Length: 302
Ligand code: MLT
Figure 1 (cartoon, helix red, strand yellow):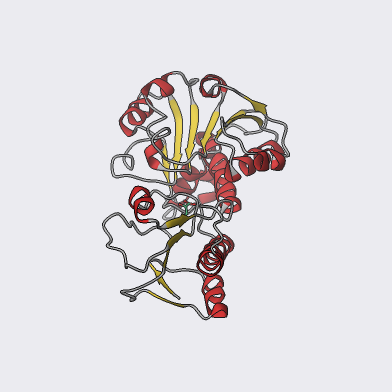
Figure 2 (cartoon, rainbow, N blue to C red):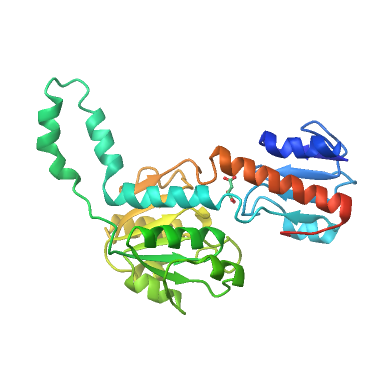
């Protein structure tokens, strides 16, 4: 069997293919499977032999799902394999936006020409006072593998956690250690929470869900976190809300040109899943999915 690799894939996954005698590489013209991380497949012409595509990650927005279903190509993702990495980054985001860490770090760096750094620091630190997250209300929108981990971790940091997910799975519910307030209407999260974090897939139901109306129903000085997909948020409405100082911060893993110059935006270069552990987990799960399907016809996480 031949697997076309469209991105760099961790050795863990490749070793699985070695063990089964599968060939893999970037150059194949004919192949049975594709393993992809972030490359976009919409304009790609597929090999006649292609039977399945595995995405080493949760979202499948880079794969033309309609075309795959018409052509009988099975699409897999790797739910949960990077959940820990994303959870840790969300918690870092909560802390760095609340405590003004980015501004503080940049200011200290700007003192590099000064002799009396210690003294200047003591004088200037009053500009970087920020709230503790303990006791604050965090709204988690989407309680899948990542949302559940974020809810548990935030509760362990003494946040009061509100969760919204109309489709929470039994499996996810079991892993929810934290006592959270389940809300039936997402508006309750908008209206009551100080921090709101998005953990839903981007599809026709969720695209643009954070629009002008959602933003205007939020409390003043909300901090919004988007480690899911940029398209969940209506960017024009968001920029207006930031400029009107309605939002205290927008922390995102999905920067865009327009956001970069807006104040109170903290943008990261899509680092959510970028840990060696997560890359190994995703590659291994994706390789297993391909092998299970090609060898035994088993379909998991499709
Ligand atoms: C995901 O969808 O899980 C992430 O976007 C994975 C990645 O960073 O490639």
